[in-house]
Length: 220
Length: 328
Image (tube, rainbow over all chains, first blue to last red; front, side):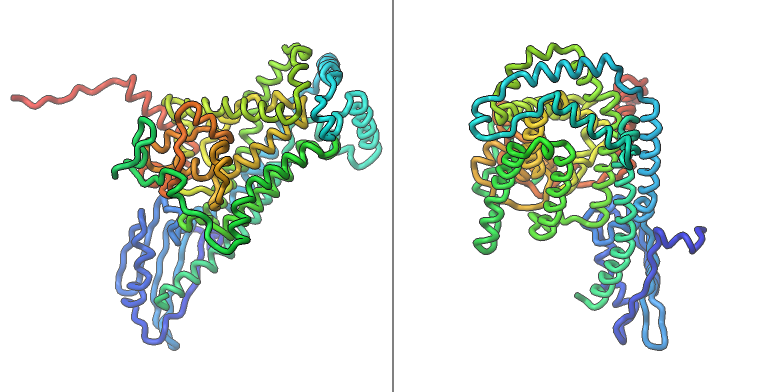
C-alpha cells in the first residue's frame, strides 16, 4: 500500500454530483461507452465499477489511466460519483526529470574524460581552413550580395578577444565548460520541460476527467 | 479491399489509402485561410533560405539555427491545435509527453553516442585523412548549389538507409517501433528505438561543418520541408512542391497500415528520389500503424530490437522440436 502523501503523484481522486433522481444504474449506463474502448476490461456491481486498461489507444478519452474504481454513494443532497484512478503515465512524467538530470550528470562525467585537442591537430585544422578560405567567392554570390565568409585570421582574432574577455569576467565558467566536451545543458532543459509537463498534466488531466464524467452523466 | 494499382503494386489492399492528388481533400474556409495554407510552405522556405543567405557571419551560426528550429516547431504545434488535418490525430497530454521523451533521448543520449561512435567520430577520422585542397572546386560553387548538393546527397544516403531498414530484417528490427505510431504530430519523427535514431542520423551532414553557410542553408531546406513529414496540419501544397518534396500526405502513406503503402516514400526531404527509384506513391492515409493500430509502449520500444532479434535468432538457428506426425 502506497502512503497517501505521495500517491497523489499518480493517483487522481474526485467526485461529481449526480443529477437529482439519477440512479446508479442510469449513471453507469451513461458512463459505459468509456469502458467499451479497446484493451479495456471492467467489472460492475450495483454501485461500483472497477476498470483496467492496457496499451491504450491515443484517442481513448481515458488513455492516461490504467486502473480505477468508480462508486456511487448516496448522500443527504443526492447521490455522488466518487472516483479513484491511477496513471503510470503521470508517474513516468514525474520521474522523467530525474532521468534527464542523471543523463546531464553522466554527460559532465564523460566530458571530464575527454582530452583537449593537441596543438598539432589544432595547427592542421587551421591550415586546412586557410586553404579553403583562399578560394574566391563565386561571382553569382558576390553579385547577389551574400556576405563574404570570415577569414581565418579575423576569426582567430575574434576568438582570442572572446577568450581574453572570458578570462577576466563571468564567462570564465562558460569557457571551462566548453573545454570539458559535450554540454549537459540539453539534458537539464529536458528535465525542466518534464517537470513543467508534469505539473501541467496533473492539473489538466484532473480537470479533464472531471469534465468528462460530468458531461457523460449529464447525457451530453 | 481492392486497392489501387500504382506501377506494379496494389496500394490500399490491406487498409484504406487515398491515391492521387485529385482525391485528397483541400483546406476549407475563407479566402485568407485557404491562401495561408496554400502559400505558407513556399513562403517559409523562401524566407529561411533568404535569411541564411544574407545573415551576417555573427548571426549565421548553429546556435541561431537551433533557436529557429525551436520557434518553428512551437509554431507548428500551435497550427496543429488550430487547424488539425484529422481529429483522430489530435495531440493529447500523454502523446505530447511520450513524443518529447523520445526527443529528449535523441538530443542527449543519441547525440552523445553519435559523438563518440557515430557519424561525428567517423567524420573526424575522414577529415583528418583528407586533402582539403582537392575540395576547393566545391567551395567555389554558388552557395545555393552547395546547399542543394549537401541536402540531396545527405537525403540520398538516408533514402537507402531507410529502404534498407524496410528490406533487411536486422535493420527492420530497429525501425519497426517507429511504425507503431498511430498518428502524425510534430515530434513523432523522434519516436522510435534509439538504435534507429542513431543509424538514421549517420550521414555526411557534419562533414560540411567547414562550410557553415552552405550547411546552414541545407539545414534550412531540411527544416522547411522535413518538418511536414510528421504533422497533423492540412496544407494545399502547390503541385510543384508535391512533385519535388516529401509531404505529410506522402509520409502518411508510408506509415499506413497497408503493407505495400508502407513500402513507399522513403526519402526525408526530396520525394523526387522516390520518383527516381519507383517507390513514390502520391496519396494519403488516416489509419496508421502496425498490428491494426496497436500503440507500442515506451518500454517495449526500448527493448523491441533486442527481444525480437533474439526471437528471430532462435527461430532461425535454434533447435527445432520434432513435429509429431499422427499415426496412420
